[in-house]
Image (cartoon, rainbow, N blue to C red; front, side, top):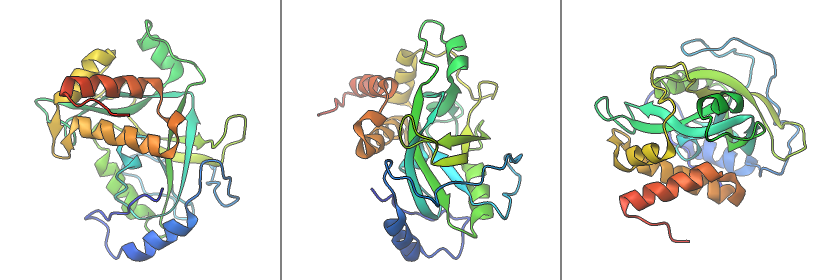
Length: 252
């Protein structure tokens, strides 16, 4: 599946036709390991507001809205999973899928061991995986794209780096891929919120980017389109609960 390419207002001189053609010819399946698909593994301190190292290719891991809304130029993409972190709708959204008065809920990544400390009655496997899409930013656009993503993910997110795997029992196909996460100490972290309470919020919340449930539905649909087992039990349960609350049952 080729991801549609959109250009954000902050990026100029973007040839969408050429970029789309490049992605169409270089997109790889999760089971394919490309020799060129290994990022620079050098550990570098990179944070919101800091420049991207000019000599380093920029790969970004998307596990939420970036999977279906790629609003920056890319030249390659790899579908795969990261290990030891659980995707959960535990980040409040005050600027995209909710408001200051009625915040929505969007995805973040919680380390498995930390999850088991917060949710003692709902532990997860320490080897839990999170499927998503890694994108290689178009060469020469790294600084603009990082500035754009820093702004897009400004509501409590910080930068971390992960390794991406295509198959279980195999080495990573990408190392040191940048990812935006809402750590549990950030002010927008929702805390130990039950999935029932989360579903009620998602079913009702709405912000400048649209309804909160649209975010959830598009994420689930995008993961299913890649491979059926990419949709973890948490997301399946949450989607069913939200659809029931919203009166829109999923027909399968």
